[in-house]
Structures are given as structure tokens and as C-alpha cells.
Image 1 (cartoon, rainbow, N blue to C red):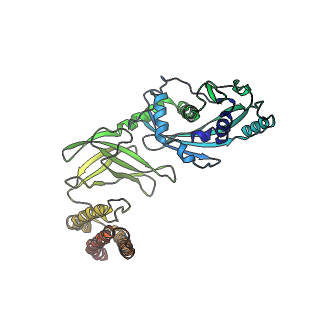
Image 2 (cartoon, helix red, strand yellow):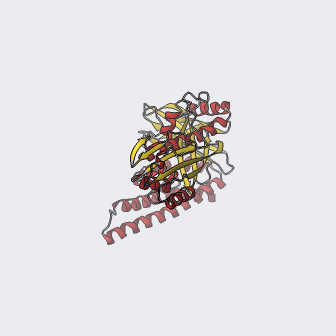
Image 3 (cartoon, rainbow, N blue to C red):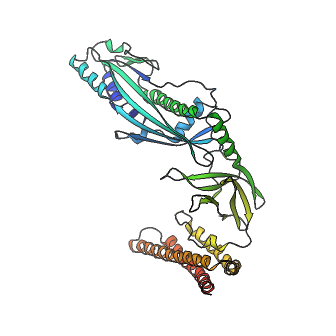
Length: 440
């Protein structure tokens, strides 16, 4: 991405022509890095967790040069150590870059220089226009700012093939020392290291655009959001062991809004990027858009253990741990998520708990639920059985196809098909009991 942002045409033209002649190049931006390594916004820290870019033109090999989220975050920590951190309590920042390239000036300069047989250099520039959108999220996953900053980067050069004129400093503003070449020999600067030099500078300007947005947000609001995020990092006890938990909003890629909350568990105090020991959903929106606590069960605990949340002003605020003696039937009716690699183990575990719920909790459900509530459970179970039948048949078909083609291992799909059938057999007596009670 970095070379492309300075224009492929500019770089190729400079290198090819300067190998046998003289050249000078410079770079200038309408936005400059401040260089203020002491800058802070109170106690608030930020972490760039997402970076995407959109180009007006796509070039072959561009993927090899595009910035990554990690590169942007690592450079931001160097430039602004008082703002950016990998700590979990840092407010998450999502960055999007929209980039347009215009190398027409460089092309015109090349043609004019060619008309003089390469004796007289003409200055040409490639302009890269950037629109940087910075989205900052609070502890609830809500956007605190979704602002844009714009800047242009001008990469200018001139070249002479047969005379020394191209080694004279190319005219115009230069943010960095100019690079010059005389008869293909570097005279000043780093003319053959444009990727590192100008690419790093372009990254620095991009970070400055992000900081410009951060500085536009009310500092008191940022510090309040930071304190709220800090309060969601806590220690909990599970099976006699201490874990760090973090209550994290789960942001929808489609809407950009929080749709649930996750409890993330870590054996030690985590930094951003640390892989969690376990994660479960502990809150969701109900049909009215209100946050509602739900039980997220840990598969690895020795006893049936659920994580949920305490609410504060209608929002999830703190993770709570509870050992469950009687598994609530309602929590285990729906088919578990079968998209993960360990889907068979997930299904086997859930089937076992569903069996416990049938034996321990069903009687109370039949006594305490109204007829309407019982019919709702009947509908959920019937839908679950339909889904399980479909999942079982698909898994069986996949396994059969593998056998016929002699490709892949059919055992996992065969196992999944069996587990789906086992779950149906557990649900059938529950369904029958619910229907009988609802009919009374």
C-alpha cells in the first residue's frame, strides 16, 4: 500500500530514468505530524483495533504493501506513547482510509523531459488524497465520534538523462530532506529506499489524522468512558481458580452497533491481542431493544457454571459467576452453534446438560409455567428438532460424499449426525410432556 500511495508511476519513472542519469525527489503533505510525544488527553488511552482501506484504483501486487491494523497501532504507540496502548482498558478505535491517486502530473513531466531528449528536467508530482475516518467506541460499544480528516501527499521528482540538471534539488516544499542521484549514484538522502522512508512518513500522517479526531472529542467524556471500560476488567473465581474477566461489547459488522456482550476469561491479566481462555455471551437485546442478561455456560468448569451480568442504568456493567444446580430448560432447547471447529464437543456437552435439565428442571417448568409459556416452549422445541433433522441429514450426506469420492475424513460429519439424532431423542419426551401439560 505504501508505495502505491506515493503512486506506482512516480516510483517506477524515477528509478528507471535515474539509473542512467540524475534525479531529485521530495515529498510534502498538507497535514504534518506534530512530533509531540508528550501529548495526552487526561488518563484516557486508545487502541487501534481495526483498519481498512479503499482505493479508487487497484494495482497488481497491492496487497503486499497495504498497512495492517497492527502496523498502525505499533507506530501510533511510538509517536504518541501517552495516547495509545495495548491495555484492555484503552478505548477501541476503528480507522478507515479512502485513498485516491493522481499521477497525471508525473506523466506530463516525463513526456516534456522526453521532448528535450532527457537534457532538461521538468518537475512532476503524484498527488495522493486521503480521507481518514476515525470511529471511537465507549465501554458499551457506542460511537463517541465518527469524524473524518483529509490530507494530500505530494510526491514530486524530476529527472535528466544526459545532463546534471536533474541532480539539482527539485523545487517546491519538502517535509523531509530531498533525495538526489547523480549518474545513478546517491548523493543525498535515501533515493533507493522510498518504501521505508516515504511509506513510514505516510503512516505518520495517517496517525496524525486519527489524533486530530481524538483531540476534537471532549476530554471529560473520554475520561468517563475510559473509567467505565476500566471497571469492566475484573477478577472472578471459578473452580477455586482466579481468572481475569472482561465485559466486551460485540459489534455487528453489518450495522456497526453492539448486538450482545461477551464475558472474556483470561488466566492472567490480559493485553489486547491475548487469546481468551473462554468466552460466552452474557447479555443480548430483547425484542424492545433493551439489554437483557443471559446465562453463558462454561464447558470447561468441573461443575455447571454460568456467567451473566449485573445491570447498571439499563446496561451490562459487571460479570457475575454462579454455579447452577438445576440447569434451566429454556437455556438448552435451541441447537448450539455448530460453526466452530469443536462443534462435536460443543454438541456432546450441550446434550449432556440438556439431559440433566430434563431430569432436574422439567417438573418445575410444568408446574410453574402458564399455558401460553408452555406453548412457546413447544414451538421452540419443534423448531429445534426440525433444525437438528436438517443438520443431521446434511452431515450424513457430506460424509457419504467423502466416502464416494475418497476425499477427506467422513468421521467428524458422521459423529455430528449421530449427536444431532441423540439430541432429538432427548427433546422428544420433553416435547411430549409440555404438550400434555399445555392441553390440560
